[in-house]
Length: 257
Image (cartoon, rainbow, N blue to C red):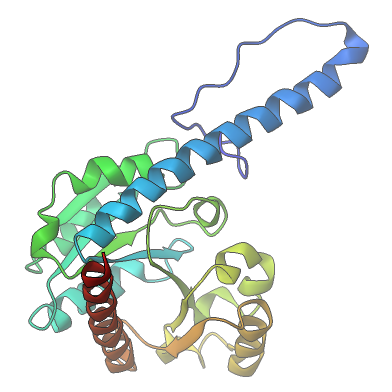
C-alpha cells in the first residue's frame, strides 16, 4: 500500500499473523515500515532503469503533477498544438478510472498512452516502463508524463524523469505549497495557472509567490493561463531551451563514453 494514503499498489502486504494483545502495536508498526521500504526501493530501482533508457535515447522526460482540476490536461492540449511543429512530443496520461484525458489529447498529432491506475492514486515507475513500450522513443524529443491528479502520493514516487513540473492554479488558494510541501520541494518548475481567474478568485498573487519561494526556492516560477494562452510563450521557450541543452549534454556524454 502507498505510504501516504494507504491506496493499493502492486506490492502485496505480508500475511497477517496473530500475536498476543500487548505485542500487536509494535509488530504492526514493524510490518508497515517493511512494506513501505520495499515498495519505494522497488520503485526507485525501476526508476533508475527508466532514466537510463530515456538518457540513452536522448529523451527529455517531464513528470507533471497537480491537484485535480488545476488544468494539466488543458495545458497539454495547448502545448501539443502550439509546440508540436517545433518539438516531437509524446504524452503518458495517468488517471484513476477513465481515459478521458488521453482521448482529449489524442487528436493533437502526438502519441498518447493512457494508464488507468484503478485504486492507485499515483503513477509508479513500473507502470511508466510498461507504457513506454507502446511508444517509439527514438521519434520523440520530449515525453511528458501527466501524473494522477494528486499532490501527496505522486511526490514520493520517482518515475525516471529528468524534470518535475508542478501546476498550481489560482482557484486553489495561496497556501497549497505550505500544505503539500514535498511536491513543491522536488519541483524544477512551478506553473501558476489560471491567472485569468485570479481576480475573480480573490487570489493573493504576492502571498502565493512568497509561499512558493519559501518552500521551493530552487524552482522556476512561470505564470500562465492554459485557457487564454497568456504566459505560455515562456513555458514553450523553457521547454525548447531545456530540450536544446539536454541534447548538447547527452551528445557530450556520448562522446566521452
